Each structure stands twice: as C-alpha cells, then as structure tokens.
Length: 181
Image (cartoon, rainbow, N blue to C red; front, side, top):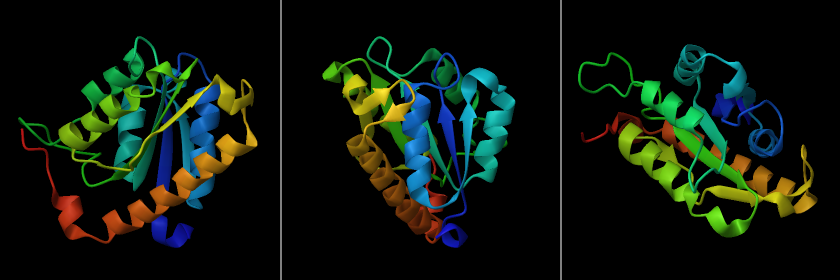
C-alpha cells in the first residue's frame, strides 16, 4: 500500500511531547500502511513543519481541545502556513488529504472537530476525511495507550485516509481546487 499512498505526516499540537493526542495520531498513522512521520509541534520549529507539509501527500492533524477548540499552537501553525493567496508563493496544504483527531477529558467537546475540519477544507482547500475523530479519556488505557476499541477506530481512520490520499493524488481536479478568497 505504501507505494500508492506516499508520505503521510502526523502533527501533534499538544503542549508537551507524548500523551493522549500523540497516541491517537500514531494510531491513525499506523493504520495507513504508508511511509509516516510524527511531528510534535512543541518540539519542532514552525518552518520545519510547513516544509514537511510540502513533502507530504497527506497530514493528520491532532490536538487536545482547550476552551472548545484546538490549541493555540495549532492555530499559530495554520496562520503561518501559506495558501497561495494575496502574494504568497506557496500553498503546501492545497490539494492534500488530511484527517483530524482531537482529544479531550470528556465527550462534551466532540463538535470542536468540525471547526478544524472547516478551516482546513475552506481556507486551505484540503480534502478532509469525514467524520473527524474525537477521543476522550475513556478511549485510553493510560496516558500513552489507546484501548483496543480506540486503536481499531484509529486504524480504520488511517485506512480511510490512505484511500482518500490515493483518490486525491489520482485526481487533477481535486488537487487543483483552490480557496475562493
């Protein structure tokens, strides 16, 4: 499968390396069967992450939910990512496939997934896997280990992302869609 999918990176936007969000992103990446890399935003300069976007065929965006939305570090990364508009020279996310996974203490903030999916699809012209994945504390054995059911769900999202990536890579029309504004 990795010959058709290409490279998929996972970006973890937690305040420190490791933990629940990293485990969820790693679970999705493991299901893709692709060449993957996990990038901890807390440990990697933004310029390196945006450069990694350019070399990837797909991206998994992972973030804990704070105040009903993704982290400020992920917002800052997206704000620093060009989209080929208004004099910008690059659009490293345009025409890519992506998946979103958010984590939280309870199920109360599961709709935060939709906000991030909307930004990626509408503002960056990314083809985002739907539905996004939200895991609360009940989806983990401990801070770094998914339950068997959550691991299966993450792997299923990974397989679906691999299929979406193949479809997007094979479609000039999907890759050519740009943000309207």
